[in-house]
Structure formats: structure tokens, C-alpha cells
Amino acid sequence: MRALSKSKILSYLQCPKRLWLEVKQPELIENSAATEASFKIGHQVGEIARTLYDPEGNGVLIEPHLIGFEAAFSQTTNLLKSTAPIFEAAITTGNALALADVMLPMNQQGTPGWRMIEVKSSTSVKDYQKDDVAVQAHIARSSGVALERIDVACIDNQWIYPGKGSYQGLLKETDLTEQAFGRTNEVQGWIEGAHEVIDKGVEPEISTGSHCNEPYSCGFYHYCSSAEPQPQFPVSWLPDIRKSELKEFISDNGVTDLGEVPDDLLNERQRRVKKHSLSGELFFDKEGAAADLATYELPAYFLDFETINLAVPIWKGRRAYQQVPFQYSLHKLSRNSVVTHESFVDLSGKDPAEPLAEKLIAACGDEGPIFVYNI
Image (cartoon, rainbow, N blue to C red; front, side):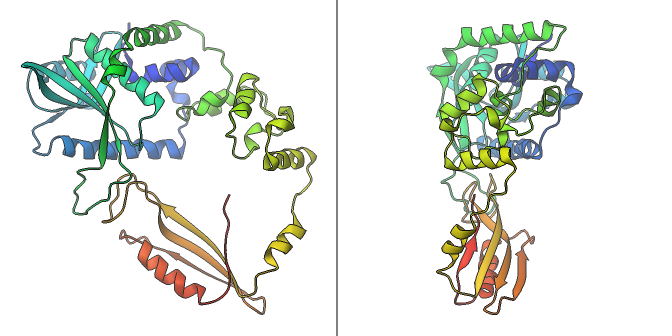
């Protein structure tokens, strides 16, 4: 029996078909740019975590993808007899395996033990991350690790970067020991269920739905959806699908087409999108737009700008995930109806907010409204 990784077990929880494809046909995966970017952020936060939890550099980083998993399991077993911090500790029960972000030695009433810390790039603990640590705790304890405590370390987006590469305070911890330790039977059931799916020679028949993006965007979506009838008016065209009743109706009934959604579940904007999509009629509230603009005089400015929100701030005085503008595009409509354009982008690597602000203030002058589009 092959050992399934924690990520494979979590894929099973999201969708058994995803797990089956990850194991049987991994070449079909097409991760989005956003997913790839999230991987990079995770690696970056993980690297910083190692410096925070091991400031003196006494810890050991295990790299199973370089030395092989069998060597990594052996190295971990030996290191668990020491008192040095361990990063990416490789642990297995035979039918499941996990890599622990951080393992720190601790002493509980004279008994040596370990604290596991799972590092996340989110700003708070999510429900699916509680499943994550439950799996980690089960694998560690089942393999004989003297695990005393397990935490999730998330990014504190109120923390302000002081500069000079000092990230002490970036991460905040939440103790999930009691929750994680109390889910052993549940996790064992997940592992057994995941193996049953893998043992099947046939791909599970599961249609696409909301689970394709919850809690993670699935890289097999294009493969799965290509085998399904393509709706003329996809329900995904509906903007801002947040209402639980609407989500449940779409999910429970396998709705794929706008025409199948009752109007009473939609807000005014969604009904408008549905109506004009189905009819093919262009919608533009000319009178409303004219009325809204009538109170403003020329010159007028039409502004579009872009921001960057780094998980790990690199500029002094910035918070994690703080929106920092670095680019703008500005069109000016003069009193004689002449349109001019100017733009700005800062790729210097320095904090771009102040030079952008100075340039934009100068470009907008002292009079006239500034219009910015927001969804």
C-alpha cells in the first residue's frame, strides 16, 4: 500500500475525483496563475518562518525531494532523538505521510516532547486548515512522535514591518491541540476512504460544481468540465454569488445555465445580467448615466490604478497584504472636449506609493472631478 500525503488526503476531502486524478493522471492538471502564485507565497512565508523559529541557525531542514522519502523518514527519526528544531520533518504511518513545517522540542514536566507548527499565508485560521492540522497530528502521533502540542501560525496583517529584514512578529499562533487530537477516528476514516478511491480502477463520476473552488481551486477543472455539456449562458456569469440560498440552489441542483436560476433568488443586478444575457439585448442606462454626470463640470479625470499586496512586506512601515499602488492610467477630458492621457508605473523596487502620489496630484491639477470605476 502506498502512503498518501496529507495534501492527497485533503484533496480527497474536497473531491474524490481530484484525488484519483492526482494519483492516476497528474499530467492533466492545469494550475492557474493565481494557484502558482499562492505556492510561491507559501514557500516565501515558510522560509521566513525558519528564521523566526530558529534564529541561531541550529535547526535542520529535511529535503525529501532531493534525498528521497525513505532517507527523509530515516533522517527525521534520528533528529527526533535530538533537541534541534526540525523543518519539513517527514513522518509516515505506512499508509499516510506528512511533512511538518516546524517541529520544536519542548519539555513537559520532565518528559521530552515536540511542538508542531503549521505555517500558513492566510491572516486567520480557516476551517479547512483545522482539517489540515488534524491530519498532521494523527500521522505524527500514530507514527510514535511524542507530539505535545500543535499550532497554526498565520500572518498578522496588523503587524508593521520595521525594515532591515526583521520579521519578528509577522506570524501569530493559534493552539489547535485539543481540536486536532480529538479527531483521530475521523482522520483515520478519511485515510481509509482515500485509499478506497485510489484502489478503484475507474475514475469517480463526479460533476463539476462549487466544490471545484472550495477550499482550493482545482487544477483539473478544465479536464472535468470539458466532458460536460457546455451551457450557452454559464451560471458563473452571475456577479457576486454570495447569498447562501443561491449557492445551495446551484450546488444541490447541478445548475449550469443562467436560465435555470429563479429570479427570486437573485438581486437586482443579477436579474439584470440574467435578463440581458438571455435576450441578447445591450444594457446601458443612458439617461441614468447622463443624470449622474450632469452635476459635474469639465475638466474631468478618469483614473485607473493598480496595486500590489505582498504577503511579506518588503518596505518599512508597510503591513502584510497592504494595498500599495504602483501604477496608474489617467485620461483627462478638457473644457473643450479634448482627451489626453498619461500614465505612471514604478518598477524600481522601492516603495512606489509616494512617487505615484506626487505624480498623480500634479497630473490632476486643482479642479475637476476624478472618476474611478469600481465593481
